[in-house]
Image (cartoon, rainbow, N blue to C red; front, top):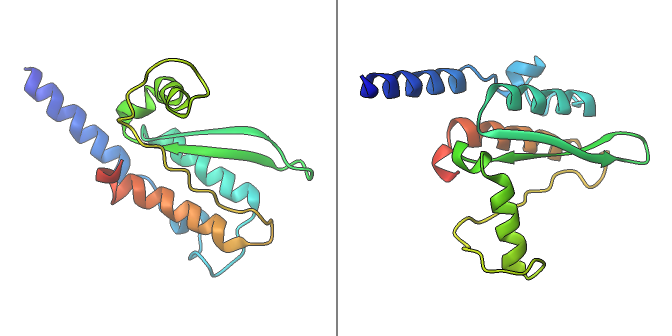
Length: 140
């Protein structure tokens, strides 16, 4: 019985991920053919985080133009569920916090858009998100 429940959960997980729209499907145009507004980029990240257990999306402030500054954590479901432990271990590994930590999980920071008029990096970020949770899950 447990085996059947596990298979059912795996099928549901695969089905949910398969249903996530690509950035082009979500926005209604091919990436690079139009300028993607900041609000549409945020909407796509919100959409993916609401429909995938591999993504956590949050904000940490606002720009001088009052645009949301945000970040997405993309990882395995187990890592998403243990983000605070991973963050704390990272701080211990760097010496910011006292204590020993096991450096088993690497954190890779990909930063997109340092200039507001660079549309390609927003689109690259959306495509990277999509590819990581659909085609490159083994990297997580």
